[in-house]
Length: 196
Image 1 (tube, rainbow, N blue to C red):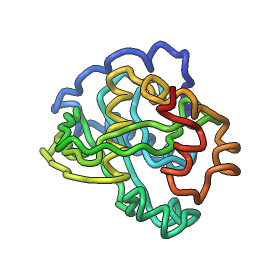
Image 2 (spheres, helix red, strand yellow):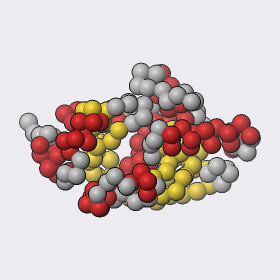
Image 3 (cartoon, rainbow, N blue to C red):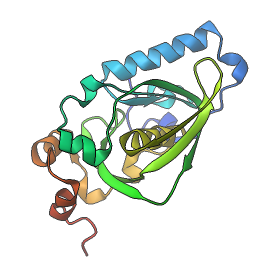
């Protein structure tokens, strides 16, 4: 199923709640499986239902070792990037914990080919239903917290470009060739982020 791109109205509207009664249905379970397949094929570390044109409050996330393999140990540590298995959240509610923020490059499957620096909270907690309709809570920091904030933004009609440091917006290929492996403080300084 194609991933819709920026400019598509469904990406700019608040998605609808899912009724708990719908979760066990074969159609809904097929939708969850399809979302996970689309996320993996892209490949990406998260996907929200609006990104495939479906205005429902569903997100899927996964960051396995194969996705992390291209990053250095220094990058993993700086970003707080750790592998985690597939997670499904239906009607997720995000709660920010603390005031610490971090700024790193983000891309989006619905803004294909571009990336920018985005400031996000370091620590969050998300509650919602899992794929079986069971209440769950996930408390995370670092990169998983960033992924959650990005995906919850999607179901609220927000894209990372609404939050980005505009001076950093660039082709993903440019970001990789110019900034990969550099400490984020050096990148921010080079781009003169926050400079008058």
